[in-house]
Amino acid sequence: MTAESDRVMPELVIEPGRSEKNYWKDLWRYRELFYILSWRDIRVRYKQTVIGAAWGVIRPLLTMLIFTFVFGRLANLSLKNGPPYAIVVFAGLLPWQFFSNALSEASGSLIGNVNLISKIYFPRMIIPASSIITTLVDFGISFILLMLVMLYYRFVPPIQILLLPVFLFLAFLLSFGIGLFVTALNVKYRDVRYIIPFIVQIGIYITPVGYSSQVISERYSQQIRFWFSLNPMVGIIDGFRWCILDDPMYWPGFVASVIFNLIFCVIGIRYFRKTEKTFADNI
Image 1 (cartoon, rainbow, N blue to C red):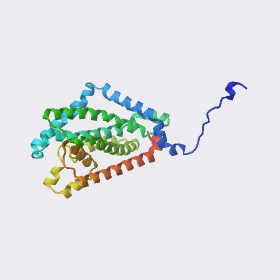
Image 2 (cartoon, helix red, strand yellow):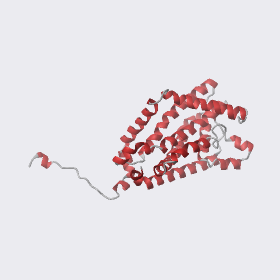
Image 3 (tube, rainbow, N blue to C red):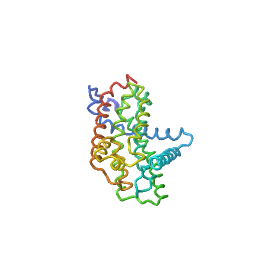
Image 4 (cartoon, one colour):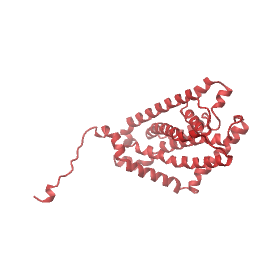
């Protein structure tokens, strides 16, 4: 008997349904793949552009200036004795841009990784999750720009700005849930990717990005504001403005937004897991 024959060989166990039972454990086991895909998306996002990371500054800055002029000056939606309207707009723009960018990136993430999906096994949820993580870089750039705008206006944020990561996490959950649903749907119906930009374009006007939710209460009623808050992004944006501007928090609407946020997240995960087995065939 040689030393090689005495060596214990690893045992390969093929068990039906094993990947289903260990799916959530596999997400942790394949965490290095998650890091690799996230870093790759970040490098591609800024390397293959003409102006690079400066685009992360120019886009929110131009949007803030346009919204400040349209909603603050033309529509006259600014609140009396309130903070500078540019900061009001920027506080709503931060979570909305994170959500819209994450949704756009996640919706086409599976189609953009055909080779990985068709050749090797790993939890497919890693792909849309890694694409959403890359949008945190844009969020960080925009947040630094917001700090500079505050410095320009000599505006000091309240102490609850330390709770901002809580509302950012809620924005991530909503983006993740809807992103999973849309990207799974996009594998089967390729024209879904053309609908997403239209939804994002419409959504920015029915969400209090360029104006405060308090305007709804002042011009209509609290009941209308409650129904308005069924849009899950409303509670998140109100939370951002509460943290940054110390705006009064409309808690019934916030609770409703959080509930719908969790519902969308659960629906997205369940639909993604239900259709995941067919990705390799349909893609």
